[in-house]
Image 1 (spheres, rainbow, N blue to C red):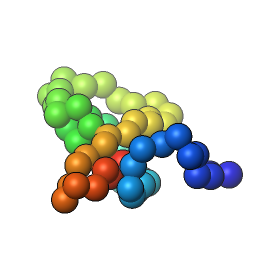
Image 2 (image 1 turned 180 degrees about the horizontal axis):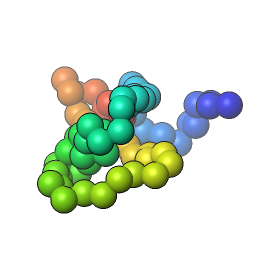
Image 3 (image 1 turned 90 degrees about the horizontal axis):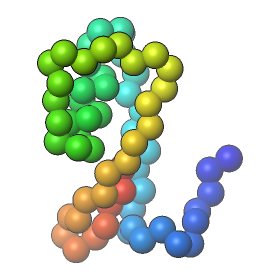
Length: 64
């Protein structure tokens, strides 16, 4: 169950799920968005990968 935590400092929260075939670079897309990195020699991701990124858009803190 997902709930609101009062100590988080953001105005909006987005949860994004990436689903596609294998070998289509979902992990690199996630890495580019969250860390501004892209690895052409990345290995397969086995299982699930979680990460988050906070943006400031129009003076609002957005967490994705």
